[in-house]
Image 1 (tube, one colour):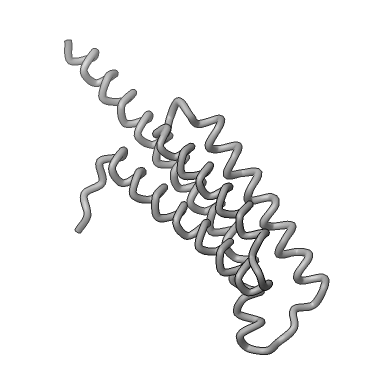
Image 2: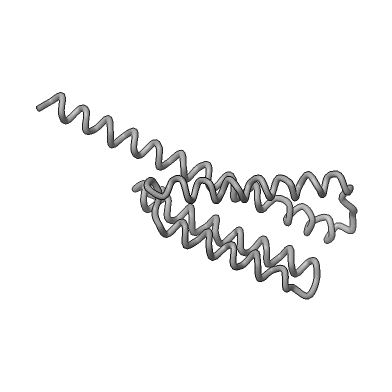
Length: 135
């Protein structure tokens, strides 16, 4: 009986660790998606130019991070809440809608807001699902 309980506890702890890792990687990828629009927005506010090379690097990081977000969301569906998929789909709608913005700054602002909202939702879902109590 003791061995069974120990084995069960070990499995539960490993499951929690895998879930925690998936949420952490997802939030990190979302932050990496957020960085390019933030950098471009800040550069515009500060009246400075980003080099073409740096701008391309930023948007390439955005694309890589976006792929990671979808990979984690789809491949970890058995680990993380289905609400995460809904949050990512909602973010994608916001990213798509940002393409219709009147100005480049509005586009960047709407894009950033869509990602920020997703980050907050994913963090809240993760905290709840992992049973993390706030301090």
